[in-house]
Amino acid sequence: MGSALAAAALAAGHEVVLVSGPVQITYPEGAEVHSVISTEEMLKRCQELFPRCDGLIGVAAPSDYRPEKIAANKISKTGEPLKLQLIETEDIVATLAKTKGPRWLVGFALETEDPRLRALAKLQKKSCDLMVLNSIEAMHSQDNAVEIIDREGELVAGFEGRKEEVAQRLFQLIELRLMRTI
Image 1: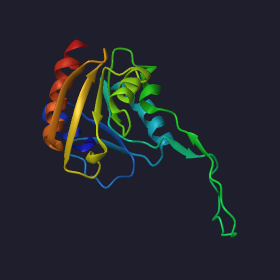
Image 2 (image 1 turned 135 degrees about the horizontal axis):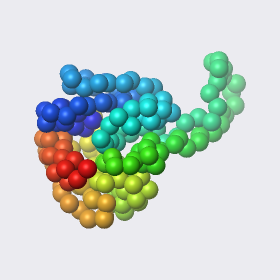
Image 3 (image 1 turned 30 degrees about the horizontal axis):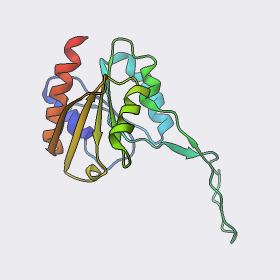
Image 4 (image 1 turned 90 degrees about the horizontal axis):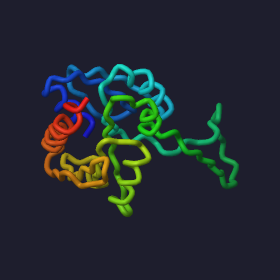
């Protein structure tokens, strides 16, 4: 969806700045692409770039957790169980929302349990203007089905079809509802 949304924004005449983790995706020509490896790197790069942007579409799915400790060397087998301690990563969209100012924010929620309820919680927590709820079936698929919820928690649209078509319709909605109000 990130690549399809970037293409839709470029086709509509907008500048596009992407911050992307390691993915097997070709982004559209004309997009300024910043590659990162970790969620921490993604947050840092977004914090650097966000002040020069009019808005953010948080379509990436960065890791919610990271290892508490990272071994400097190979961990050899011992025959004993290995315990992995995970800690929560900082939420990128929620962090950027603290410096939102007049910018608009669109978040994405991919939830497997109580999807609408969790999307509404994310909408509030992340101070988004719109929240796009999509399903797990969208992963590694050419198709997607989304519901768009506004900041009042109202369902304002639903689109389904090829990701490129869904992205075009979603971006048109973003332009209509958010870009003309700044």
